[in-house]
Image (cartoon, rainbow, N blue to C red; front, side, top):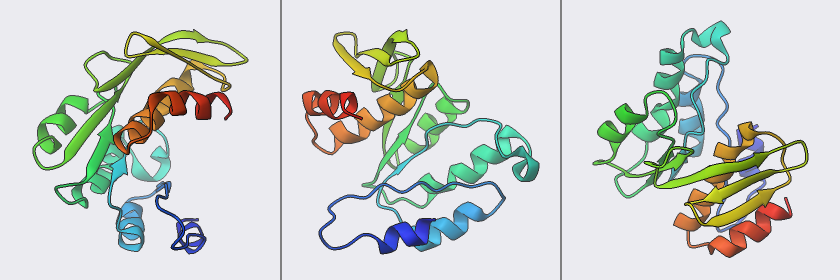
Length: 168
């Protein structure tokens, strides 16, 4: 869980990525109180965990608490491909350093799926940079693009991203 992962970090770690998995109302509040993140990324809004959270709108309201707890110089990553994309852009682009990612060209970081097969997923990033990742299926494409967006925003070279993802 989150607490154990935090305890596994030391002063040697410059960055850490934590998943704030939620399935019930108010769980995000507890996780944010423990973590107090500097930056945030919401990968998607799907009707998952509806047993406790109910409709997609309630899932969104629970997840968006991540952005509500960031400060004004924080990076906040969200996909305009997701439901509520325009709402997030309107609400948070002035208060946070909002960066968008996805398959739609209006995202800051976008890619086209060249191939989504059983052995790998091949993307053409921003129209001219090919990346092949040994993960199957197009469902991984947005997560790959999100990872690239975060890495590039924190100064990782795109070629280094390609190498790391090809070895994943």
